[in-house]
Image 1 (tube, rainbow, N blue to C red):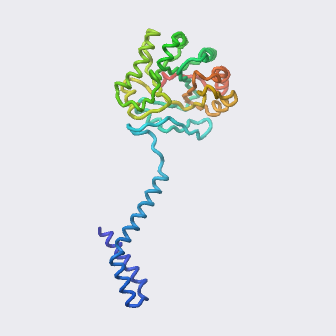
Image 2 (cartoon, rainbow, N blue to C red):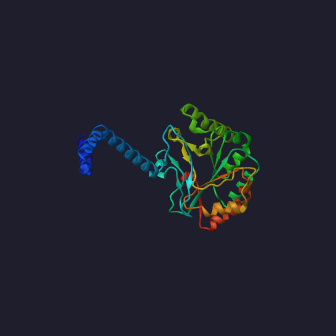
Image 3 (tube, helix red, strand yellow):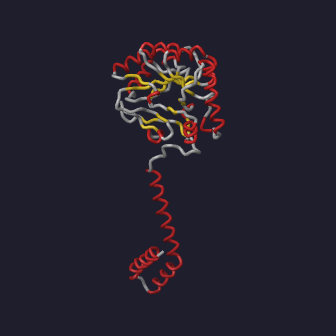
Length: 296
């Protein structure tokens, strides 16, 4: 309050100096005006200054990274330098608090292969063959209907030493599920189907459908004993009527590969089925080896 009174006093003093050359009559009129309008004018100027400051701060402030428990976010990446880990919309440290990951330590030339499996259209056998040719192990994140419809493929994945992970029972937007019971049923539904096919318990690795998540989801998955895996390299390979060409696929997947990458590919992509054997060879020629998510 003292500061405000001081500002008012300085304001009146400045205006008084400006008015020194006016006639007594005009000076009196100015003083009357200042008496009734000066303070409201100062309030108006202060409000405008404050508003301008807020706009500037909001414009230049960095965006929020990890969403709040009530909000959701789609996993996204910004590739800023070739051969380097991209920037995610959450940091590795923030995700690690919930046993969630999107890339590994970049000090080793090791990459991690993962496939999202929504249904089967004939490309998974080609993918399994390519992986076997290079002795590369992968994690296949499967939905409920894939397990039910393709028990032989599930068994082949297991027999070749691959991990079968959980991509939920019905592939919903999991961020819209607030009940732990409903969240749990989406994961347990796949666990039961997997055990019916293999006789074994499922490895508790989880990937949110479409990469949509919120803090509550990550927390619930962690409480259920799951590790959540996003990715640091992917490309648009899921449109059946608009598959990328070989050249487009190699351009994205070779330029953006980096040490510690978790690679996301879709098993339904005919391009992936056709190029995977050659792609793995190219990555090996670049000095990369293949790790497994069990290392996290």
